[in-house]
Image (cartoon, rainbow, N blue to C red):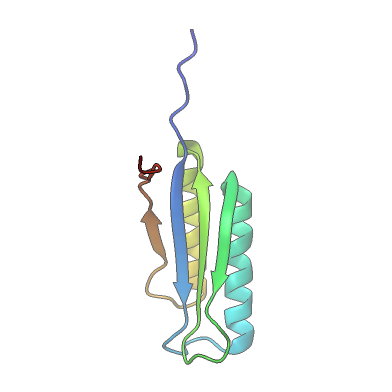
Length: 104
């Protein structure tokens, strides 16, 4: 009998450029490359957010579901993009979910 596969993780992946290391073109490319990596390895994308353009910082955040078998290759690719774009890190925040039900 086959073992059931472990459940996917819901993960928030965030990048930023608040230190202005990246030019606008590099920032756009970085956002695109991280987005492509997430499309390649994540099963479902729940959302994608960018900081408003009039604010003094640049951030991007994706909420995705990642199967256990895809976590290692996704993290490896994100680490490559982190280095390619001279970043100190990319945030990987695993979500826990509680369901709030109607009160009676």
